[in-house]
Length: 216
Image (cartoon, rainbow, N blue to C red; front, side, top):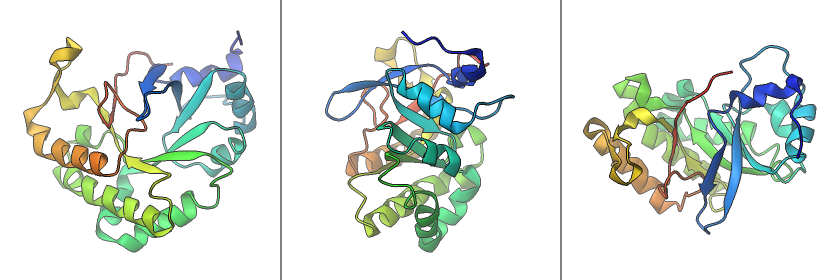
């Protein structure tokens, strides 16, 4: 079993190690790759560390080209993301979405195994109703941009929510969404269902909720 050196302890910026199910019922271990820390090792060292473990998927909080390049030819599935600040433009301007794909994804794929694009991060938690309303149109335009380059079936589009979208989470069998988000969540789930996006699922739902237990 590999021992994590202290110089790469930043990998423990993961909210938690996550075993999740994908559509074909396989399971894997994935981590969040955080960069808000001191003395971070170079991406190349991180890529080697990940290859020495059983970690098969990595979620980036953005689309850092140095990290994406470092993960090329490793076979590790990569989740990249757009900034919340990009959501209004993604929602209103299909050309902006196409340019985002052309700049942040196409130069690296398929050598870097990008499997999912998260549009925004915990948008519901922002409390910005305008931003929340633009989330689904932004996701649709990113999906259309992928379709235009014949990658809509290979790379999925989703978003990430905090546990705050749940009114009740315990026990899991009784979990339900906060009614104030119900219409928005229905739209997002409808989109994910239509695009068969089950790449990062939480309890068989086509979305990812983060439960932040630890902070490095």
